[in-house]
Picture 1 (cartoon, helix red, strand yellow):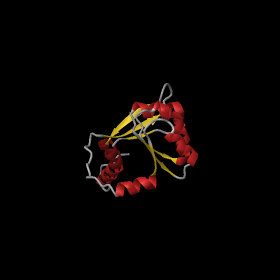
Picture 2 (tube, rainbow, N blue to C red):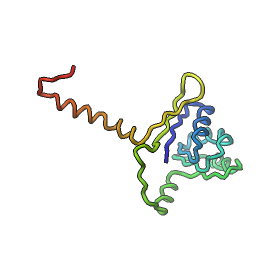
Picture 3 (cartoon, rainbow, N blue to C red):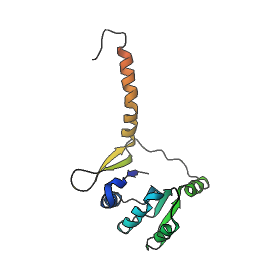
Picture 4 (cartoon, one colour):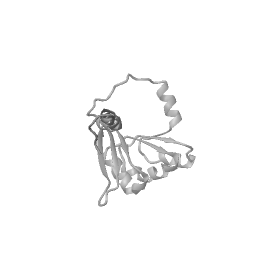
Length: 146
């Protein structure tokens, strides 16, 4: 599963662009942002599931069922219960599989997506460890990098 980050600060056009460009089928959001999703949903025919955290307004939740799209709007706690009762086998990703597409507001035009593989994320997390290791090699020796 690839995660796509799209921030409310992108505005409705930017949010719609990032979700449409990646053919997003599920959205994870906070209840406070559901109205933003409702406004752009007609532009997102591939979205079938919206998972939210927090307390959502009942009237807004009903509005999702009136869109004509086959869509499920699910509180996060219900999703956890659903997953607990429908376990599937773990399928680990390969290093080059796409882990995340991060959308940023560019200085011109629509938001741009930066694609990160699982290998990219692990490497960036290990970089501080590499620096600590390299520094430990140079302590007490005649070689010092300044």
